[in-house]
Image (tube, rainbow, N blue to C red):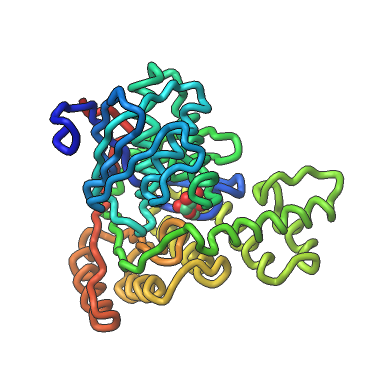
Amino acid sequence: MKHFDGKTGNIYASPGRINLIGEHTDYNGGFVFPGAVEQGIMAEIRPNGQKTCNVYSIDLKDMAHFSIDDPQGPTATWARYIYGIVQEMRALGVDVKPFNAAFAGDVPLGAGMSSSAALESCFAFALNDLFGDNKVSKWDLVLAGQATEHKYIGVNCGIMDQFASVFGKKGKLMRLDCRSREFEYFPWEPKGYKLVLLNSKVKHELKGSPYNDRRNSCENVVKALGQQFPDKKFETLRDADWDELEAVKDKVSAEDYKRAHFVLGEKDRVLAVCDALQAGDYETVGQKMYETHYGLSKEYEVSCEELDFLNNVAKECGVTGSRIMGGGFGGCTINLVKDELYDKFIATAKEKFNAKYGHEPAVIDVVIGDGSRKIC
Ligand code: GLA
């Protein structure tokens, strides 16, 4: 490892993800439809026999040192992901020893492609392999990543991103039921269509963003449902139907109602997309993507001007489906485009976006790749 003492370590990789549909449904006990991408984080790591962990971010050209027993941990956010994973893996019974590590990635930061989950999963997988005889289950690796976000970063995220990063499989999307944690792999081979992301480059950082407020709104509605229907158990919005939501409309704020309305609609849309995919009906898949965009923009209010603009361009070009992807507040749109329309759409989106915002969106062709793994 050239950044430390010339000795090489083991190399691990974990991907970012896309999500076809099912946004903000994970922490509501609903369904999501993600897949891992080829882009990810790669880390080289080796026990160092010293007292501290020394970790170098190649992309940020920044070094962090922390002791495993330090109750505070490092201050740099990127290093806190790794420190958090160390703590969570120890809590799972892995006897983590100080290590040297260096890592780099090609998931664009703040694009809604889960660069942070890729980092967490990469280190969770690596520590399990190096110090835990791989005895921690894949699901516990997922939960270690999620707990890191909650406890060390302050984002009360669901489990979609870490799930996709750990369980991803080349060429397969996954439909996950976030309540039961059952999932199925769906081959992704849309004949005649491509999936492409357009990154607005509007930076999105969920930390300190209204992401947690959205989650609180959903929980407020769940509380009101419990009061209105004392004989029924409501754990999340997954347990509510449209009539029940209407019954509490006057008991919650107009804003919370709007948020919950989106979530119930999104729950239905994911299931409709699954049926449509099984029937090879990509026009319906695309239609549902547009509906999701509308809901995320107008009801959940996590879009931004640039993403609405890209969505409109897609619509004007006759693109089959388009929507904001991930947590929101910036990042990418995901677009389902007919092969013959692809070149024209990309050229038009670049030209129009550049004319309005002074820079082109980045074009990322989606290739569904493998989940967390050891390279060597
Ligand atoms: C972020 C979170 C996920 C999920 C999405 C929205 O990516 O980390 O848990 O809630 O937003 O679907």
